[in-house]
Image (cartoon, rainbow, N blue to C red; front, side, top):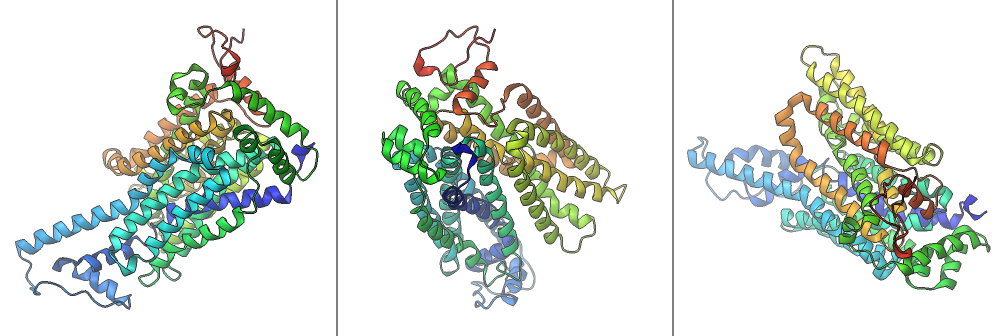
Length: 524
C-alpha cells in the first residue's frame, strides 16, 4: 500500500515547499519588533519639527549615523507655527508607518487571486520559483532601505513581499495537497501553518534589541528574506512536479508515474494513478471553472461557501486582538520584560501547531476545528471578564494572561492550520485553483479588515471587546457543526460524496457527468 509510506523524497519536497510558508510568517512578524527604531529612522530621514527633537537624540545615541541637519533655527519657546508643524509631522509619520504595515496585506490580497492561475500556467514548481523572485526583490528593497528614501523603499518592499505571500498562500497548500498520500494529507497540509508560526516566532526572536532589532542592524533583519528565497529556489530544482498537474493538465502520464514513484519510493503506483485517472475523467468533462462559476453554479456553491467561512472564522476569531492586547496585559501582571512573554506566546503558538500536525489524522479535521473553536469561545469570555475586572481585582490580570496562552493553544489546534489545506480537499483539479484563490483572498481580506477596524472596535467596546469575539466564534462553531464535512482519510471523490450527503437536492435534478463532482443529490 503506497499510502503507508513517508519517503525521503516526500519529506524533502514538503520541507522545501513550506520554506515559503516560513517566509510568510516571518514577513508577518518582522515589522513589529523594530517599530520604534524604524519610526525614529523615518523622522531622521525626513527631518522633524523641534518638538520631535527628543526622538532624534534617542536615535543618535543608539546609532553611528550622522545627526540630521535641522533646516530651521532652534527656538526654545514653541510657537503656534512650530506646534502646527509638529502635529503635521506626527500625522505624516503615522501615515507612513500605517502604509508600511498595510501595504503587505494589500499586496497579499491582490496576489492571492493569481496563485492558482500561475500554478496552472507554469506548473507548481516554476510558479514557486517565480514567486521567489518577488521575495528577493522585496527583501533587497527593504535591506538597502537605510541607504535611500527609507519610507519609500520599505513600503514598496513590504508591498512586493505581500505579493509573494499572496501567491504562496495558494501555491503551497495546493502543491502539498497534490503530492501527499491520502493518509498523510492532513498532517502534511498542517505543516503550512506550522511553518508560518515558526516564521513569526523567529522574527520575534531576531527582532530583540541585542540581536537585530536595533538602530544599526534593523535593515539587515528586513532583508534576510532574500537568503531564504535563494536557498529554496535551489532546492526546488530537486523536487518532483505534482503528478496531478503532469497527468491532468499536461497529459504526461509517463512523467506523472515517474514523479509518483519518486514520491512514494516504490515502482507500484497503481492505486494513486487510479485515483488520478478518475479525477482526470471528471476534469475532461468539466469546463475550466472560473471564480464567478464558484458562486453561480450550484455544484460548487456549497463547498465554496464552507471554504470561505472556514477562513473567515480563522481571521474573525479575535486571534489578532489577542496579540494586540498581550503586551499590555503582561505589563499589568508585573512582568518587567513583556517582550519575552510575547515570545512565550509565540512558542506556545508553535508547539500547539505541531500538536495539531500529530492529531489531525487521528482526531480528524472537523473535530479539531470544533474543539479549537469551543475552547476559544470560553477563553474569549475569560479574557473579557479579566479585562473588565482588572481595575478592581489585580489578580484578574493573571486570568487574562492565562486566557491568552489557552486561546492561542486552541487556535493552533484547529482554526489556525486546518482551513488552509481543507479547502484544497473540497475541490477537483479543474476547480481547485479558483477555489484556493477565493479562499486566500478571503483570508487576506478579513486580515486587512481586522487590521483597519480593530482599533475602532476596541475604542467602542472597551474591555468588553472579547465578548463580541466570543459571539462571533460561537456563530462559526454552529456553522461548522452543521455544514462542514469530515475529510480525514478520504479521497477527493469520497469528500464530494460527503458534500452530497449534506446537501438538499430536492430542487436540483441530477446533472450530467461533467458536474457530478461535488454535486448535491437527494439523500432520501
